[in-house]
Length: 524
Image 1 (cartoon, rainbow, N blue to C red):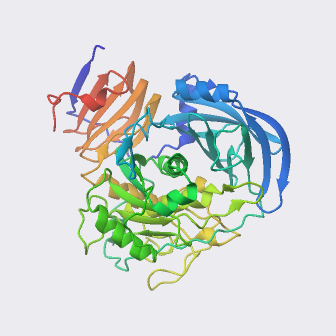
Image 2 (image 1 turned 90 degrees about the vertical axis):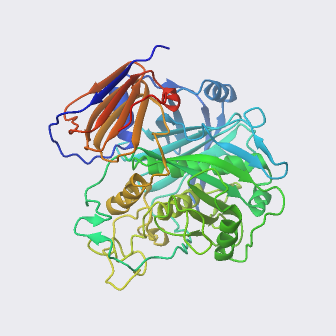
Image 3 (image 1 turned 30 degrees about the vertical axis):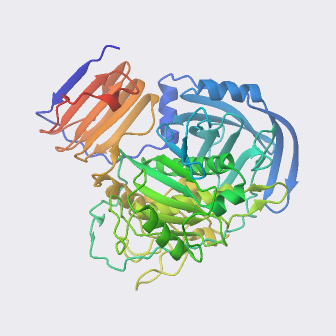
């Protein structure tokens, strides 16, 4: 394919301040305005509805395997399909997330890495419910023989999939929901040690970040998941372990993508025989996991996924990306015990919401956020969902909990995933990521079109790519080093601006070319 490289060393600028994050809903809305076609599939066929008095209602339906096979084999960048839920039919629209494209899979029993010929790679989608006025977040995790759906809207979490977590090769499917007013809080405990040192704060916020929301960081955080032998025993097979981790990661990755923070799975390892870790407590497990893997893993952070007695989660430190292993120093290591989530009483299906929250919460610590009840936030604790961490008064009672809170313990508040991390924790994470030199740049996705707003201030090389068109209203800083790669058009629209000294490159090639740019590409 012919490539056109346009290098622009900016010599002038017109100043506009902008701090904007773009949600999944806004991205999909912009795609529709740009005329992007969402390929429709008739995946589900409704049958009957029944009720579960404990965890809400469920709706039974059938999977159309021929439609699923077509979806898996064609893997369009944008898709749509309908999901039966109670008396409603939800219309869902998705854009593809490429967070598994470079993932390595290893089974310790053989020491052989998985390949696409030995196990089929899942296809991940992030989307929304289009026929509701309420905010929504939806994931679709598509395997070669099954599909899993997770949706969060109106304070409820709904999931759909096979009626048995461990038997996926079936056409018996259901959507499982929670009734408003009957949401049971889930028992959660995070053992991450909190700093009581507020010296890093100033009048603008944590790490110098302004209280207003910051925009896209331009970097990817690669996650290594290590599944313990107990985890493998619980899920009975390597395929079931892979499916569970992939689906839960997809949900957690959507929470971050909605904050303009990009995650990818770099490696999944499954222990099919006794693992080398001590599981007496989460502290012992994390310590032995950390000393075993040290720096010998693919990724920017490492998570041990276990199945013990409800130990919940523990991160080794806060804001520790790019820290090399030292036995007596904090690093990017996480322990998560998945044995604390309830199952739906009618079916052997685990509720995903607590587990996705657990993953996202502990990753949030490694990426730079404290709990919301920490005294060190600007203005003090953000909420009063738990005892304060530090010597200060409690925060206000929130209308809803966010990702780094303990509001999941309170049945009258709970955590609403649509509110994400909140401004200050989100900014703390984006600030930490933007300053980490070890991280790769890029979005981890490749849409047909991309609509970009907000400021780009990091000095590391930042790339954006789309199959057809990129529209940019960004405000660059003097240190920006940016490349736009679209298959057809790159449109720089007001208030796009760039000050003297910034470097902008435009490539008309489309998805895939950015990973093989020649070394002759000029650098700042």
